[in-house]
Image (cartoon, rainbow, N blue to C red):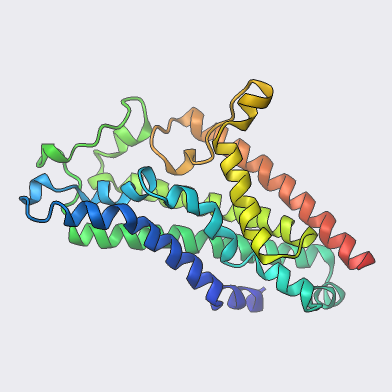
Length: 262
């Protein structure tokens, strides 16, 4: 486990994943900040608005499932092509290999994506004014009244919002990394391991089930987007739980097949 974790967190892919997501978050924050730099501070966007803007209005919400597999899950392709995986299974077991690979990939993706957002939020809290509509009414963000963000925005300059978005990004990134593992073991191609989870995310986000079967699923961005309620969070966790379970079973079947018949 230690060797695999060291391999995950010292690989260029892990750093590249975090860097791409971090830079994408700046796609909204940097122009929004500098476009109002000549205005008095109270008329500029708050640190909370600049931190969340890249998710709500930028490309980060689209690139999150693309960057997540890049952190470490794509190393499954290298394990197969180099013949490293059969030796790992031989020295341990199929279940041990799957456990170590899944945990390391999940943690690498979670820390890369969640950590990138946290670093982004810390920077803008140092640069911009903290969110405090009682002092700066111009900074008030119009969250839905029944949403959790509406209540959390009043606590410690929105600290619970930062924490929830970070955890939501981290958890969903980890799930998409497991999806990438399941793809990689059946189709050992790094590009497909990255793009197929992103395609699944886009099809889910575009309400494909509504056009095909007449019902809508909860949005895949619910756990790190606004408009959250306890019921919506529950539904999102169930949906991601099903994806995680199916992906792990698919991954197990693929590793078992390649170990026995490759």
